[in-house]
Image (tube, rainbow, N blue to C red; front, side, top):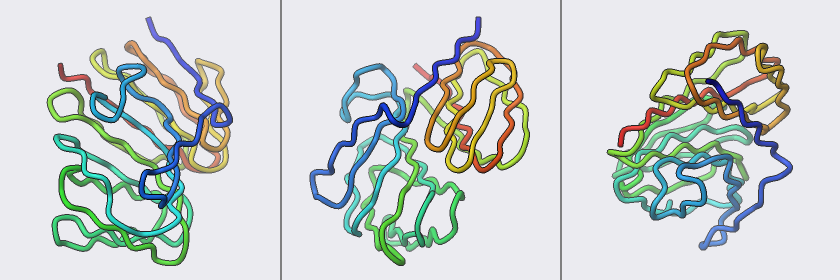
Length: 189
């Protein structure tokens, strides 16, 4: 049986970063109520006000996508990567030393973190109509990053930063009038 849990943006609490460089709003995570030390997977949106070092997450893989702003230059394990276009997911190890330089002021980014051995994620960006399939051993998180999105069978409309978590084998039609992230998360253990 398929379930759809709608996660509205206006119900998320903002959590300030310890270094004062921004705030994070968790969209969804597993297991429910897990902290930063024991999540299997975690998805969030962050308002980044200033550059600086990223927090290290041992044994965690990350995918970051710039949603608003001019972008950022990430230096991951000594190699620079320019994220200067919106809606292009960039994957990197969360336990690598990572620094961030903003390219033109504050940004909003979309973050997907998975703990190795517990979960793995694929992040795709949709700006059109597409079929979304939830495999039996996975969940799919849809997050509207701009404009609006609708799920046909579930009769759900998502506005900017709203999300829908789909569990159980399913296929649905996603109609996007803007941009949406489609995150498929495989549970591993």
